[in-house]
Amino acid sequence: MRWLLSGASGQLGRSMVCALAASPRHTLTAALDRGALDLGDRASIARTVRGAQGRADVFLNAAAFTFVDRCESERELARRVNGDGPRNLARACNDAGLLLVHISTDYVFDGKATRPYTETDQPAPASVYGHTKLEGEQAVLAESAAFLVVRTSWVFGPGRNFVRTMIEQAGARRARRDPSSLRVVDDQFGSPTYAGDLAAGIMSLVEVGAGGLYHLANRGVATWWDVARECLDQGGFQDVAIERVRTSEFPRPAPRPAYSALDCTKAERIGVRLPGWRDAVGAYLRSDASPLAAAPGGSA
Image (cartoon, rainbow, N blue to C red; front, side, top):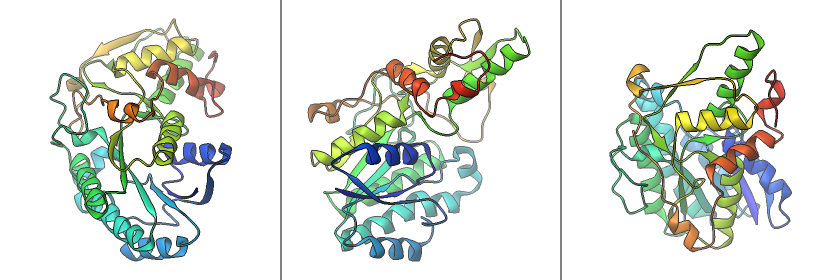
């Protein structure tokens, strides 16, 4: 199976490149960054898909305008990239006979739930980012029942992410012998997801012919404090204290869902099951992209 990938410089994009290279059943036709494909430009989308016709079977769209707070002030750009872009991409892929796999987000939910969200739960985004991502996934699903939309959440992997930030801050404190605590939010709940596991899961969904909407994340529910404590403990920073704080202590332009954990039972029923999130943190810290290599005193 031949893949074309957008968002190649992102965490999932980088992980997909590695996963495809390691698979005997898949090949990567091209990995496109924003310089090669602008989702906000309809002509750029049309040219890219036409050029891939006959050379690729699957188009994975891992590109988006993901700066959640900037979306609040740059609404037109967010809508053009996250809403109109997937719509134009879906039409082009349908015309060219390519399977489109589109990545969406837990931010399509308002966060008022008290148990993990399923694919049948009603979306109610509270932010511009969530609204535009919902527009994009709905446009893809309306274009073809064969297309696949994968919602995921709290991704960490190659590049900048929460786990890396925690490890770097802990390493910096140890290097300067700073006894102060890290301060991490403990009233947001979600499904932490390792990009390497997510990439493998997406490939498995495609292999079994999944179409429509699926949730895919590492198993379990955690707060950001939980994730911070786990990555520091596994990384050898057990002595670094972490203070539990509330979201209200870090005011941001865009609201964050208080609860956005994803129920992945639908994917599990067809044999696609990701590891638990604590195991996923360990896998990331042992990977080639691990932040521990640059953190003073850290250990895998």
